[in-house]
Image (tube, rainbow, N blue to C red; front, side, top):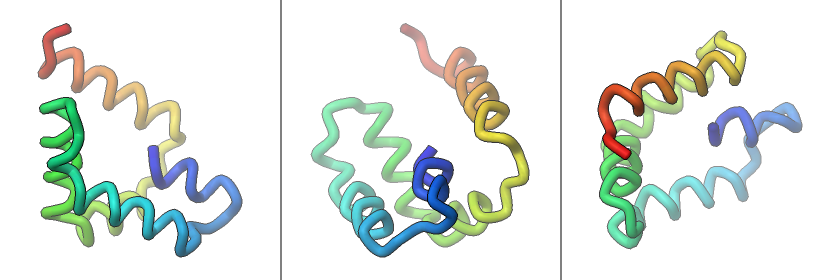
Amino acid sequence: MFNSVAKAEGRIDSKEKKALNRLTHNSSMLESDLARDVVSAINENLDEVRFKLENDKREIIDGLREFADLLKKKVTP
């Protein structure tokens, strides 16, 4: 989602990168266990995640649908 929003203007600027870095480095402060786990996993693999995001050819709606399907399988309400 970050990548799609940040790229809406055609590029990811330094403020957006700094905001993502702050989030990943402060993940322990998030209230949700799931959010902490997701952000922590992103932080541990940030270079790989960035590479995959930059090379993802899917439309945002397709990626969000895949993510929603994954959550339905892995997370109980």
